[in-house]
Length: 215
Image (cartoon, rainbow, N blue to C red; front, side):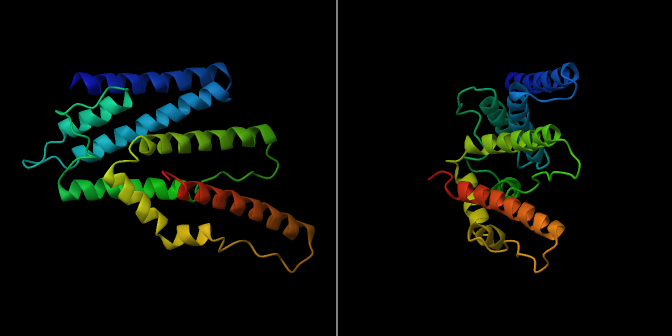
């Protein structure tokens, strides 16, 4: 294993330990510092997943090692090196490019529409929900951090464009699919409508922010 990849996995393991150790100390609660650490860990997890994806395509025609090192170097703050071309910015076999782009589209598609945002459960303590929401936001920020550092790469630019052109994203951006006000005057129905309207507004705000990304 290269020195760069070894350092990358050491830092990733350190980030895991930091998050887990602090969780034990603080009784499973996240503070601002912990959420920042979780964001970093998620960004490194995205890098690790991309590196594994590259290894899946190893063959006599394609050796992924140099591309993996490029991703590792970027994640640990090392400068780009001509001997280690970044697979997001350089030519790779078509099937490798297609796989990286598909992953980017899936990841950015979730971010662009705020998918997975936790729902506040009935009877759940407000602090517990804020913790759950904070973890979701930290993981989302970590994924976005990984791609934001590569936003000028043609592959990522193409993925962003593809996401923006999907019907689901465009409908959300235009406000289509908003909850309809219930005909019933029941308090429970009205409360559910308000909650779903708020949730839809949050998701639409995510879409508006994604639309401005890189502009």
